[in-house]
Image 1 (cartoon, helix red, strand yellow):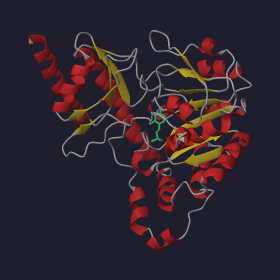
Image 2 (cartoon, rainbow, N blue to C red; image 1 turned 180 degrees about the horizontal axis):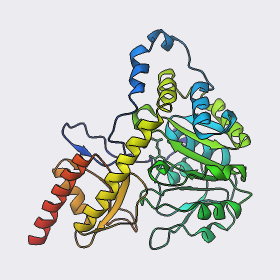
Image 3 (cartoon, rainbow, N blue to C red; image 1 turned 30 degrees about the vertical axis):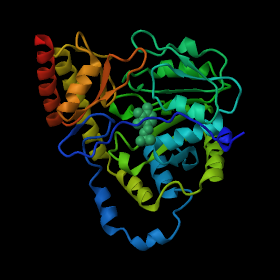
Length: 355
Ligand SMILES: *Cc1c(COP(=O)(O)O)cnc(C)c1O
């Protein structure tokens, strides 16, 4: 017997690299290439540091109320956390306590199996179809809960509200979590389904569409009952997850809807252009409704392209995993960044052909 026998051993999630080099093009973690709404600067300029002396509001009310107003729900239906990673982890701890396996797609956000492992939650991977779609019938089986992103990551594939509702309605005895990290880039949120389903939890984040990955703000919207259960668990772990400055910046950015619509439209336009450019370069990809494209080249090896791009100081994401080892996940950057990507890809592919 050793103290090590009692250690909770886990294989942690590997986040995308955050290289400390200047002059790189960072298309590897789905960050927004545009700054947050300018009004956020006013919060920082007027912030009184003596506020740091005190604990923040444990209910994060200013942010919760701003979110409730933005999304047309009651404040009692909103839960906030330190990025949606914190929110989803809290939801796993709160809702997935049965002995039956929870279900999620085989190709999806690679944090789900890590949370399942760390909380000792049994899980079953449900294979996506050959074209990376969710087949709702596959989720009509005994389970202890369901989670999937919509649009899915890292594929970018969007499912219709009809598909989502088919899954929820077939599972009245399970909590169904829809991770909408990328919903603002052209998808339809499942929010309208909340009136009908008490067991639906929708999770979103400020990290992608609201340009605030560094502030760590995520939130969940669901029935008052689900949110109460999540808050009970939160207040049993850490009452003060959200710091004071973050609460103020988060609430402020929600006021500027015009800026939000403008930056998301720019990213959508750049993404649509990227579909044309990447296709011309010989890539194929599922149609993306997110701020990234999951692309496979007709002939060139994905790991090779990944390494060569890195030499050009362009970072994209690559996983050497079943089904996806010939794909690169490329975040949509500014038009200028994307032009540098196309130039680099053109050179890499030309060299490959003559090699
Ligand atoms: C980025 C991402 C998250 C988490 O983002 P946070 O920065 O923690 O809010 C959650 N789910 C998916 C599918 C993501 O891609």
